[in-house]
Picture 1 (tube, one colour):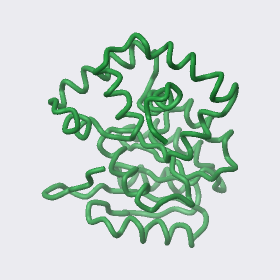
Picture 2 (cartoon, one colour):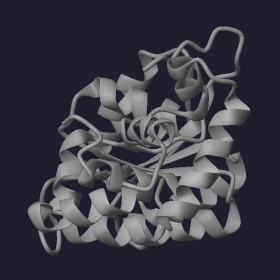
Picture 3 (cartoon, one colour):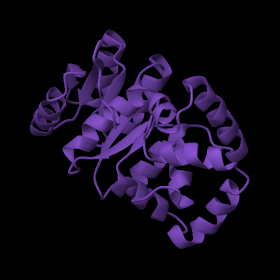
Length: 225
C-alpha cells in the first residue's frame, strides 16, 4: 500500500487501549511513519470518546475490551458525535463475536494486536483515505463465522455474479484494503469513476459500507489470503 504523504498533513489518530504497554507499542509503530501523528491516548472507552470529541482526529484506533465503555460502544458513540472520524478496532483471535457485532455497526477496519506492524500503518492510511482495512487473519475468521466458509462461498459468488468484470476488479481491491485513490491508480482510472463504480457495487450487492463489501469479496474468493 502506498503511504506516501509528501506535502500532506499527517493522519491524526486517537489511540485507546487500557494496557499502557500496548499503547506504547502501537504508538512506537505508528511513529515510524511521518504521515501519522498520535494526538492523544486513552485508557478506556469513555475517555476515548471525549478525546475524539476534543481533537477531531481522522482515525480512532480502539481496543475492543476496555473498562467504563468498551471499544464497540465507544466506536458507536464516536460515529454518532464525530462521524468524520473513522474507527479501527484492535482485536485478538478470541473475539469473533465482538468482530461480528462491530461489522454490523459499520466499523472501518479490524487489526490484530499480534499482527504484522506494517498492517497497522497500512490500515490507518486506508481508513483515513476513506477505505476499509481488514487484517487477512481477521477477514478469514469473520468469513468462517456462522454457517461457515464453504456454505457461504456459493451464495457470495451468486451475489457477485451480476457485477461487470471491472466492478469485480474494484470490489477485489476494496477487499484488499485499498482506498479510492489507490484503486484509481491501480486500474488507471480517475477517482470519480471509482466512486461511481462503488456506488453501483454497493447498490447491486445490498451492502452498507466498505467493510461489508470487503467481507463479501473475501467470501466470493476475489481476494487472496
